[in-house]
Image 1: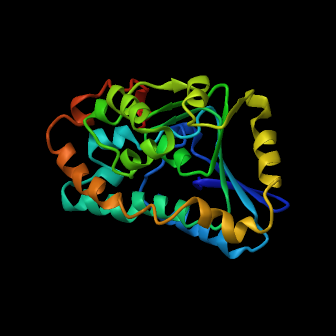
Image 2 (image 1 turned 90 degrees about the vertical axis):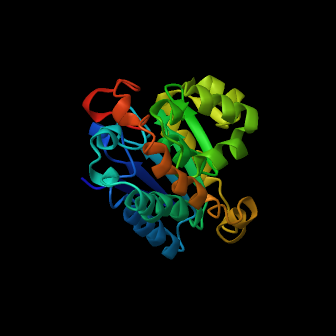
Length: 256
């Protein structure tokens, strides 16, 4: 199964994260390549004016695969330098691909956006949430840090105090709270989410391809390496997910 299901509606491309059996986890080996190739193809298509990202099934994205973290398998096999390289060459490639997108990105958050999934949503220019959406960054509960740049990104979106509350408690917040905290711009019924996102995407103007993204963002990927450098150290303390198997309680496909 491919990471994305892609649909085109005029000048708008919708990318649907397509791992519903894993709550649309991201960060698997090769995901950085998939994000980079998919978004570069969109950059190369000058007819595209806006991109919507959403999730298949009941989740937007549950983040990284905790089961793989616990087992030390897949993207989390090995440690030290190998793990650092995996973050820099795979997870960070996701962030760079999103920030390198030449058109506005709308996150249509249809369900839980947790860990790396929450950070991916925060990399969008506009976030619209269904009433069923939830947001959380429970890295510290798992003995981890947000090695994808989230510790820098979230305070930029909602402010330092709110970001610290989310990070230190690891608690999920609902869509209403997310709107109050300005994590999302609006909350709509689940049945209206796609149409609302499409209406916002169609309102984008042709000139935005050249100037809007440049006006919104500078080089926001420069601060990724300190977090990826610290991630192997956090895992080596013995307080990581292998020591806390019930931290999320999502069963055999626990994600982060």
